[in-house]
Length: 136
Image 1: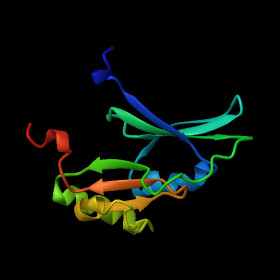
Image 2: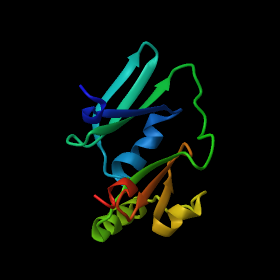
Image 3: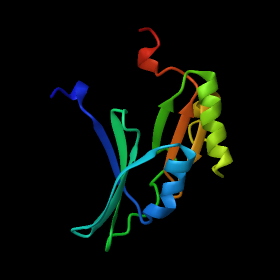
């Protein structure tokens, strides 16, 4: 399979899967695709949308501390060019108790809203077309 057709898994550790779950499931509207426990010391959850070509995985190890994000510029960006879809996504985050934060890079405040998960990692909802698709 060529990489251009691959499904992407973005994985990172956390110290508390259950604390992250409301941010991604309730706030961002991701589905729980799979959950596993005590797989050689690791437990985890995969979140996403069944038809999307990506999903997020969060793992927790019984003896390893993951800690918080190393910087405020650790981002996942979702481009939502349709203003109505963007407004609904922002409203959903806010309705579930996740207020926007000031972005480390002011560019993201001009074209969207940034939200910080309980581990300090950030998600940007950008009200724009992805840059590489603008002239397509």
